[in-house]
Image 1 (tube, one colour):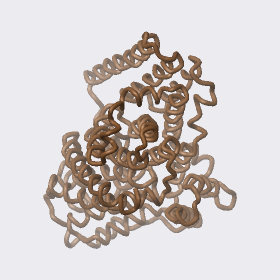
Image 2 (image 1 turned 90 degrees about the horizontal axis):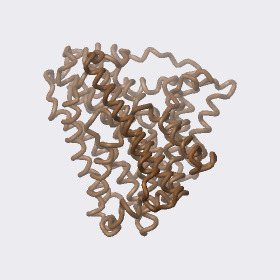
Image 3 (image 1 turned 180 degrees about the vertical axis):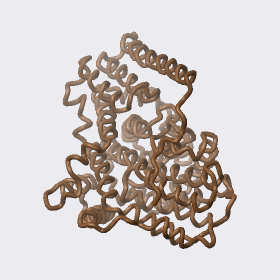
Length: 479
């Protein structure tokens, strides 16, 4: 399949660079002065709590403005918790002792194992070459492939890179340019659905983080299969809705590639051989997935399965991954999740979460107790919050502990609220809201305005989707 790397956009001009530098300077000043103001303000609350809120505000502002990499801001916040005497090191870095953090670490390496197996490429080739030669059929095939890969490639960014090579090969067969509706529709949908599916299957860092928060702070043991079944109708509706919306917003200039079946098969012929290493990697991935989806039968935690798979992959005579592969893996998401959860633990221990729930969420208990009122409040509240806290992982890690403790304290269903809030994190209209969109945009096949149109349409459809699933499907399965 065609191989290409992102980065086709031209570098910004000198004026743009200066403006960006000025904005970054202003953001840095705000990130320093506002937390200092909170730290020294005469609020009349417990000093430890006030200091914890000041450090937390620094972390949130740094994540919102992205003045430094997310993991860097998180680690700085953990050090500040320790430095100002809010928490001892074992509490300030306690997020790294949670299973959810190590689940993210394992998921990153499972993505490496999957790529070595060649399974993602084989799945993509199998689906694309069998959906027909019409643009409509091929588009639906791309969305289904994106969904199928979510299970074996637990990283939205990695899936976009894999799917990008598929889409570029198809665009060449359609004989259209990068700015065509065919190209824009294909790249938009493989990018957008990659970030949505990450919330509906416990595969990406966002859903892993959300599940961990629901278990840790909500006290509900939700398994891999529970999560998958809860969102299964939403998956199907999303696939169909995304397909129709793309055809509506970006009607193709060329309706098909009739007469090019041989070229299509040749373009997507998998050249990677079934080497012994690839076979071992494929067996390991398939075994991991089978154990994940049958957790209701055996009760083995998904975290334990994932970490065991990584350890097995590192063993002698298995050798699917090596220490060098770990060094090459981007572990910043692992560090970021650990620091975000550490922040939540510190807030919980110092009374910060209790204070926030008593002030920010006061009066919401009657509204959230009624699902017809709770659905729009949670869905659109998460959507707006996500606009300010760009990273979906930071959005979920910083907000779910508060919502979970509020739910438990007020006798609400933490699982129901957590699932709706997590689902709502999928709605996005701007590129900066997730690294998945940034990577997809970097290929240069769609514009910001294209994403806004697609984002508004899918966000509205997903609101209808969550209403249908939460009010019809979840009562049937006991949620």
